[in-house]
Image (cartoon, rainbow, N blue to C red; front, side):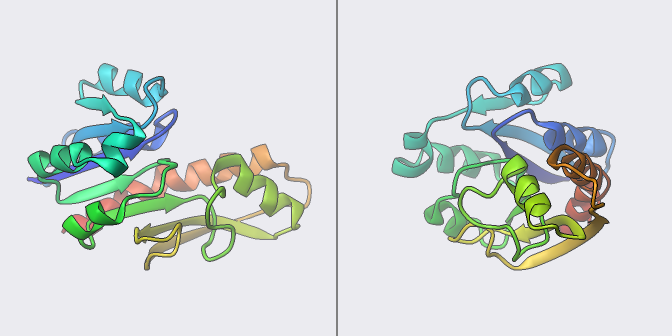
Length: 187
């Protein structure tokens, strides 16, 4: 059985989707969710779904081996960043080569980098009058949103769309594709 650990910072809809997707799988399961936000809604979702969840601070992630030791004890086959907003430390990436992935709400390399997440991305897409956008699932490296691309899915941006409309389309793409891509990676 393959083991998935998820990192999230906010509401946790992607985490919940992944947990539910793999709940009855014979191949993989989400064994733990870690968050940098002690008030994140993802913690409530995990409690409801009966999945282990922990919050940590920046020191535990970047200055000590606390989070690294949790990961080593969990022995994940894949670490999934699902709305996790902090840069992932290089020393953890070194311990789990090609085992850390992220979903980004745009077609990278467009609209990537520090500060480009959530509504910031969707507002930029609308402001620049893009005709399409989408999601990118990619490996995580030492730079924001620059790891090798694994998968992209596109959607149209209508001339009348506002950022909230784009956000809804992106959310639908994430719900549809993210679990399937994770499953393929684990095969």
